[in-house]
Length: 427
Ligand SMILES: NC(=O)c1ccc[n+]([C@@H]2O[C@H](COP(=O)([O-])OP(=O)(O)OC[C@H]3O[C@@H](n4cnc5c(N)ncnc54)[C@H](O)[C@@H]3O)[C@@H](O)[C@H]2O)c1
Image (cartoon, rainbow, N blue to C red; front, side):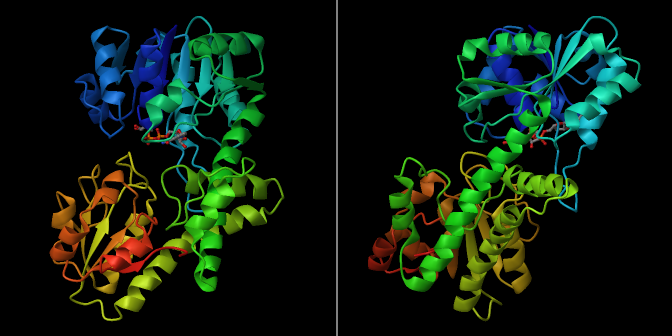
């Protein structure tokens, strides 16, 4: 099929590259000319395992191309994927400006033939109707296009395999022509497909992310209780998670969830709900607990270092989770800002993030340079390489053997036996 993708970020690029790899002809576009320049040269502007290889392969075989000429890309395609950003506004509502602008671009470029506009961006419920209205207002007759909601559930760090082996594919549409074409497009993936109307598909995405966020805030609430009653939350979570009705995933206590999806999607669902006249108390608590988690972690650091001036802390891990260089809404960013404002000097290390997202923190090239001369280390992202630390070397490298473990990476007993002062979350 002939496809174009508007927005070549994490979702758009993975979608475009994987669809090309499945045998389709895909043109990826973006408003950002610098990004398109890099991509044309085969350079992926962010870290995502396996993506670069697929892009290079499909650029070479001619099934994938990049252009800044959105109009031409739309004209040449039968299916147009929209994968532009929908970040939070100050009040928590999702910003729809990029989706609206993409819809206007599509309206201008549709000249002949019939096009299917597939929305992959996570959008407020009702966005499909807004896109339809924009096209109609621009004189495109209703028989010339269909609008589909096809939310994306991939996770950064495992995006390519998530796209190729999804738990389910949701297709929200209002006509059979669109249902049939998009079903055919995904047929090679042999996935479980759910057919719904557009609003239901849009809702499913928000509910999925809000449920994952709820699991994280739930276990963080339990962690805070465990700390008061002298119980280790990791043992509790492992036992509770073995119950198949509950499941172990997203039950890791720590400094809270981050990234470009969970925080904004919980806020957006709160907004959707409130605008519809219902106050979602549970979702509000999920967001509030998440915000407090990093503050509670910081309290532990402040208690150990009441006079931060002249003290040096290593922040280990900056990305919001392992396997990505994405620092959007990462708990580390809030922590680094707060440590600096308290007067600590901060050295950071992350295997994928090469520039500090906060001015004033020193980025180090490896684990041991970051730990060098530090009075404490705060682990904020559970990168697998942190589990392989040589504790003797860590002790020799640091000024003081003090570890704040924001992701419960280490075993408290082993840390104590190795001579560390150790603080986990909920243990
Ligand atoms: N990142 C994830 O893990 C993930 C997972 C599932 C769903 N989503 C959703 O997918 C959407 C995209 O997320 P992302 O992380 O890929 O964002 P991103 O910021 O990485 O990429 C968005 C891209 O769209 C481009 N863009 C903006 N307006 C444009 C326009 N009018 N025409 C063409 N390009 C335009 C931007 O320049 C940017 O490169 C969001 O709604 C997000 O919530 C993200």
